[in-house]
Amino acid sequence: MSDVTNDSPISLTPPPAGYADWLADLKGRIHTAQQRATLAVNRELVLLYWQIGRDILARQAAQGWGAKVIERLAHDLREAFPDMKGFSPRNLKYMRAFAEAWPDAEFVQQAAAQLPWGHNLVLLDRLNTPTERRWYAAKAIEHGWSRNVLNIHIETRLLERSGTAVTNFEASLPSPQSDLARESLKDPYRFDFLGLTDEAQEREIEHALVKHVTEFLLELGSGFAFVGRQVLLDVGGDEFFIDLLFYHLKLRCYVVIELKGGKFKPEHLGQLGFYLTAVDRQVKSEHDNPTIGLLLCKSKNKVVAEYALGDKSQPMGIAEYKLLESLPAELQTSLPSIEQIERELAGSDTPSEDDSQ
Image (cartoon, rainbow, N blue to C red):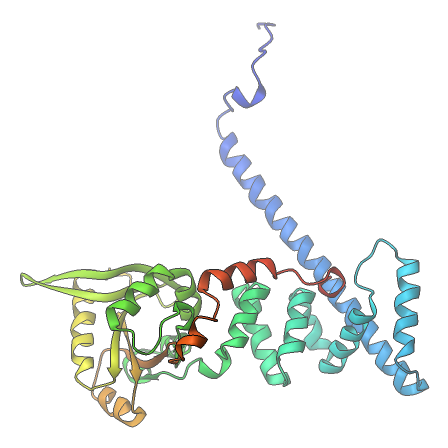
């Protein structure tokens, strides 16, 4: 056996057979362990904050302590734990409000403690009812929303808009796919991030949606993947173009989105149905579910939309979109641009350390 020493850096030495797969597996396990540790620490911290808040409520009620006790408690806890953030008077008041909003310890353990403290503060500050807070908490956990995304969905009233589009999914899709498809659509869709007014034409809106595809996907919701714009379909030698084509990862199907700049008309569904048939025959694989169509129009008569869908066997939905309302020129010039808003959001994502810990 040779005793010659290899002076090459270890990173340049060829690894043994099977090493790369083993390393990849180890990296995955370490990453998973890190995530579990972070979640465990967060869970214990949120539960601790809830217990402190519950104790403050109980002692103030039983012994008549006033607000000054929170100032004293904040001082004493900071003295005892100088390296631990989160014991400001403001945050102690949030703990009390948190315990008051969620008296049920089981819910705190199963739901609220799965969210970072900053998310729980958003739910407390921005929402008024337990029903709203439970819904947004569940969605934030399900989809892994950041605090900014949670704020955006609350601001645009996602709860009120979810599952409200006029559809025929119950008749055209099997359960539970029909339920998931219905919940995947909303009405209206908010396109105010485009910075366009109601005078914008279909093609202008379509171009802006692609330009701001990240915001568009956020508004569409979880599961949508962008495939293309003005997608060419060759049918018998004639060319047709789909406005926007997506694939829904959870529904396992293509989604055709057609934009109409005016009020909904029943004949719009004929064109949409034609596109669904073409995608099913030319694009869809045998493993995909039937293609779904979504018609987005500036306005609609709900009864007319329901009648128009009544005899359609293909899965379709009809919803409105909302742009910026027309504003006086002097007011329009004072509004920040999309880029300015994005910069502001990027710079204001971090609240004070005591409130977010």
